[in-house]
Image (tube, rainbow, N blue to C red; front, side, top):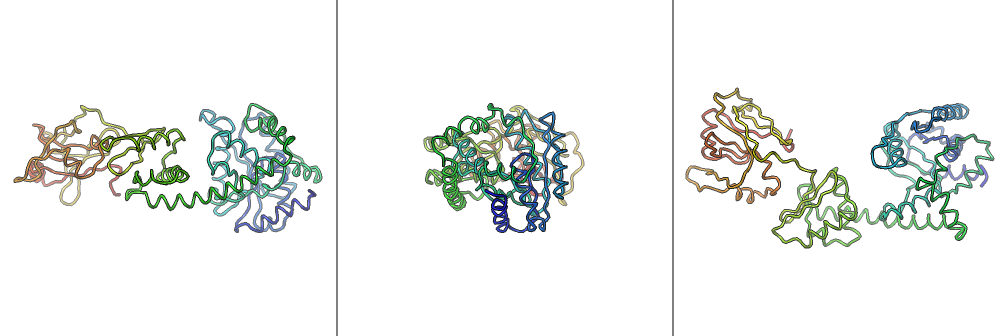
Length: 445
């Protein structure tokens, strides 16, 4: 493909972009050098405010020299360059390639202006490699559909105008244009999965099936259409099965969803409430337990950073909970009392909502549920079991041991946080002209 034809390909993709300046993700390698050179030769790209961003990972001894080469190339092209240094978290457990990509994307997103479009030089060969990698890792439709030409990215968009071009086409362009680029020695390391596919697997595949890259890309485009349809349907399905509390789902309706929707709905729900997603095994176990556990059971599935629990007709998604020590108990004089396990604080306030001064002789104590508690809510009412009050209020069992209880010196229950106050508690608080307030994570600001 001559220089003009590849530049026409970039120009046609550029014309379809939303408005906004363009920043090239410029590593200094062959692919990004071709993209930068192609865009620099288009007046329409320069009119948008073309610039380049180079990320220095610091993983190679020569990384500073690479940055110097990028500066020289951008100066010759009269394209402004921003060089960003990042620290790659090698202990993240993601592996070197994934950790470097996360650091690179995070820095890139932070550097973008509102509405700016970052241009990546991924091409058709990259697309084929990505699809095969995702397939080998057991990805679903979203993963197998590989890279989009345009998608949201930070404050703007990620744009990949070269997805229709082969790596050999980019090399021909670079040779014809006399480009200078950097060769990263890590690209020759077959221990890296992507490199192994590129160096060992795909050459054999292409020898047997010369059109393999085009065929894989075509399949990825069809899967993309299916993934987009599933995404749209999962949004509609989630609206049907989500509870009034955003962190809940009506589990029977969720189980009744088609297999193609059940997993995407679960993941969309968890992303919306900012919880990590489970792996496929954990999803399967969740389905099994919800389908098989008896109604009086309380199944719970956990994975790092999240857990899902069932109560009545709903499943609740939450972060792993802390529980106070069973024998925790503190004398209390009414001033703000911090509670253990991140459960907020208790305070007594006057009729104007102001904190009271400390009461003499610490007339109260605070503890948590131990089982068998009872209280009388009114002078002429029956003694009620706390367990029954919790059930009537629909408070999930796992929350009941996290609600503070106020008692007197004789262990008579005066208040269950600020949810219920016993007849004795109302009289005691009235003596001091105060009321109880429980400040916790769900307290309105």
